[in-house]
Amino acid sequence: MDNTIPQILSELEMYAEKNNVPIIRGPERELLLKAASLTGPEGPKKILEIGTAIGYSALMMAEKFPKAEIDTLEIDETRHTMAETVMRRAGVSERVRCHLGDAADVLKTLKGPYDFLYLDGPKGQYLRELKEIEPKLSKNAVIAADNVLFRGLVKSNGPVPHRYRTLVMRLRDYISYVEEKYDTHIYEEGDGLSVSVPKGMT
Image (cartoon, rainbow, N blue to C red; front, top):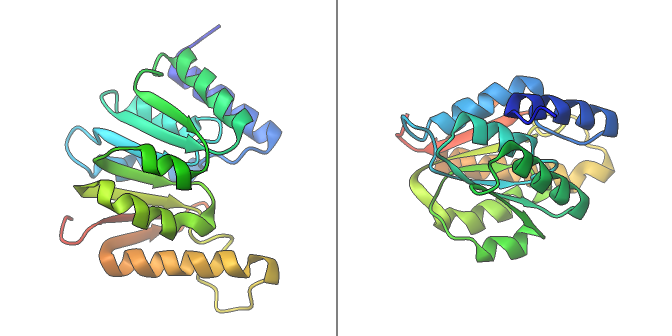
């Protein structure tokens, strides 16, 4: 069995497509790595990810930044277990720590400072989670959040289907917050990836 990281990532891509597991879309993968690289010449030293799923993006970042420590959170036990297996196969489990549980509980147990934050869990919780994590971010931390445009509805002036209304409102609140407090750019590839850096950093 080939246990190299590129091979494992390829397997995860096929698994995700076959089993309808959400992983970061192709166009956004390079954007995410570029965002993390903004933290400094050697990239981030400590990364926090909310929304492990099957471990694809955490493993991708572990490969790109071989000195980084990563804490990644997942509420689904099956996906968490798969992600742990993935990290062991890839030989990175000592520096990629997979945490099982609700972010609201797990975040209280983690210590920073984190210099890269990737939000990819429940979209309606982004703002609450960011506010809880902010005290644990380093001075020049970079924040990325996936799916912030949610099917184009977040920036749309048209009617929002009732079942998505709360989610869309919360994502709009998140965007307003990071645009006011940080220098924020939203890349519209995929479903919208926002990248926020401290004001004046770029």
